[in-house]
Length: 479
Ligand code: FAD
Ligand code: AMP
Image 1: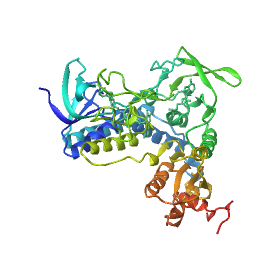
Image 2: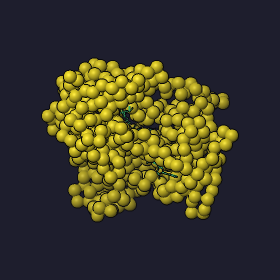
Image 3: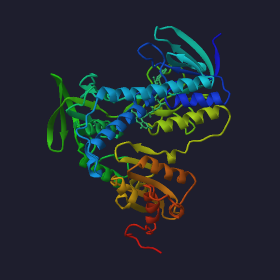
Image 4: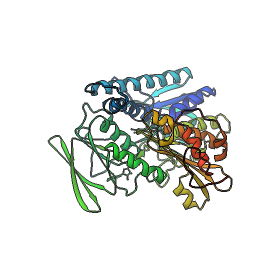
């Protein structure tokens, strides 16, 4: 007889490991299956986020920001540094150490919560059995009362730009360069392309982003996206919109990219090319033909808003299901699935999941955009406030961007907040908390914000919804 668990989780990214920890906390007999191994064959937990996603990209964004600041922004403070140089292998080494610390931490937390780890590739069989195939091909089958599928996502490849992991890389390869490319091409000016392009641009690469869409950041509020486009262009990112890549040719350590825009075919030659055209769910070999779990029309695992698949007791969470591909969304779904299994009644509020681009300045967004509200025919009021009028932002020489708050015209409830500016990721979270409590714009305007902080821009934008902002001339004047 095979061993039986209350819960078996497949995949240990921020969806799966959080689900397993929560299940362990709830006293459920839990196992987690992970196929990722290091070069010595030891299991690696944490998935995309910890190993090749959120964390390593933020480590490099932080290093490159410090370098850029030291090289270009210290002089104005009266600080002279002499020539600033970057030791790329050392920077990459620091990033690797941060990753190792965190993935080791996850292993410790799984152990602490009594979670059994099973090393290998998991596959859901009929009857909630999970087959685990180890690296040497050995197969075992475990029984489960409940299964949580959390196999995540991998980069999309496009035929005109095959990745060779040398000159043409995906987001993972772009975290491992051993020197600063002189000319760097990025296909796709989405979240990941902008972040990785920023890292290498700050370190001195000449960066061109080639983006097929005519609109920059089409899912973001366009007031903020337009502002961000101007700010990033001023920083030196050359973002070419309406430009679709049709071919690449690698020759003598260079790649020539052909793309088509409204003027016709064009070419650019680079030392490195990063392909960042999106991610796709990992469902290959995850489900036996008779598992009973179905995919939706886009190839994601079909689930309802409780992350339940078509098989009772089988849940799917994170990047393999509908919704934004974000680590915190995956984790919240993981907690929800574990608590549902334990008989609790949790839910994820999909209306308040923040999305952040960790450029400098950051772009943060929560709730509906003005474009969505217009399309839905909702009446709303808007308040904007520029960081250029915020004392703390000016004192820090970091005053690009603005806060935009959108509130329902009838109820004044906040429907969305969109920010480009210093600490936008943290500021948008403040509004997300307010939204969770059903806050109106007036409520935020009535709160006391510490002075001087960049968060005062949130209060002022909320006041501006009703024409009451103090530190700017309001267009709408209301008593
Ligand atoms: P994953 O993290 O992809 O984990 C899935 C795990 O399942 C992997 O460990 C994989 O090895 C394992 N697995 C797959 N199939 C099997 C199988 N059959 N058997 C056993 N194991 C299996 N999100 C943010 O919120 N903020 C950010 O700043 C951010 N930055 C990013 C930067 C980059 C460069 C990238 C690539 C992504 C970034 N993301 C960010 C997205 C984020 O990483 C993902 O949304 C998140 O990791 C999804 O979590 P997950 O648990 O669904 O899957
Ligand atoms: P994201 O979905 O945020 O990861 O962004 C991926 C981006 O890549 C999208 O904005 C796509 O429009 C873009 N993209 C996809 N294929 C191509 C292509 N062949 N040439 C240029 N851009 C592309």
